[in-house]
Image (cartoon, rainbow, N blue to C red; front, side, top):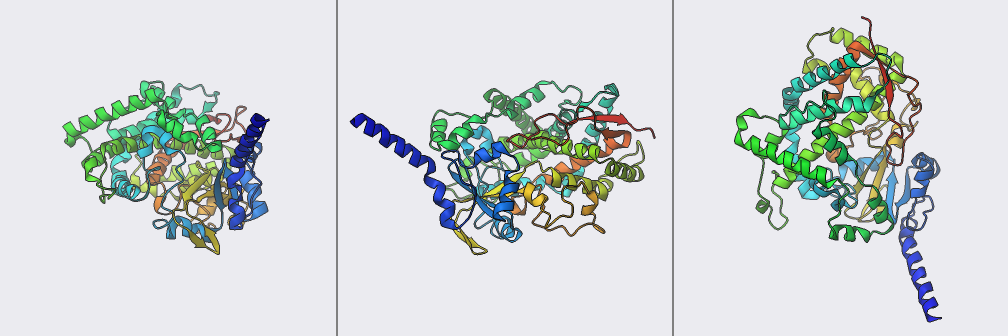
Length: 490
């Protein structure tokens, strides 16, 4: 009998543990969907990826949901977002919600995961890598690899569909490795080289540990104790050794290099320079240099190529917009003529196309911030330690801010005849001081290859094109985006 009572008591405690945090939003006076024990509101995402739209329609601009047992305050109110992302960024919402960041191995020292004064130091050190002057310096590299990519189409069968992300990824990798480390990885010509293979292995991160930690947060301490990482250790070792060799070469001969890595090396500091948690204003330690280099590679290869895939997909589905863009390209850049940085920057309709595609299909469908001290915004008290989520897909398709939000209309971003874009309803690269530091570089990389590709080719749908796109729980396409690249008859 005593054993049975003890068993029942343990079951009671376990059940209580599974639902203990679920009064959090009730105390705040915030509505939201009813959570399930241990897993919170995550089953709703499994049932429908339109979950955030359903919540917004039912609960308004603010609602509460739970990722496992962890509360997440979702906000789509522009006035609140102005405070969260901009006005109170440095004082209260400096940090992103870095869930179980120890599992990311060497990536944990990257700009996207570090916090507070350490983030400020790393950000201020890296920012000069992406000035207009630096972008002009690397522009010829970008043009060279765009030309090389388009030439590979000569070997493709004219009636064969192309996996668009697989097609543009080598170009993105070649650009980032050349601009960052002054090497020619040549993955455009040799897509199955060791660099590409190891990078693909690195991107195959284990997801199941996150689900374990979501249900049982104490599990993260166990993972940390055994040194577990979600990234492939062999691939991490490969890149760390590769980057260390690059770093050694740069130190041996500074005169040959003016890339991103050299700028970081020039700002290198010793870990002893950081004393008692007091951060210098600038500088990077060796582990931080390697982490930023990995982040550069990751962003340039995966995120930029995914965004390019969505742009080409939207152009294929909207041939009128594609035709208009090609007309603009033909006027500004006659065939085989050189492309200048200034002319590329000033091609407004191409900017409009990219912006509209990123509105409809943002590469990151949600951004978040962590509240590090209790604050009141618009009458709502947000307690210290609360994670705040911003569902970009909701904002980017909200009919309050966009006319016909489901339509692809690049002209809505026109400077002279476009819509009055609400500054806090569009943020594909994030917003405020903690936005994407490399966004101008990424846009330049995308614009260059789009110009070169559309000078000679049409992008068209085919029998293998999935319309509309279907996404998994990680908001990645379930099936590869496949299109036809047909040669233009000029």
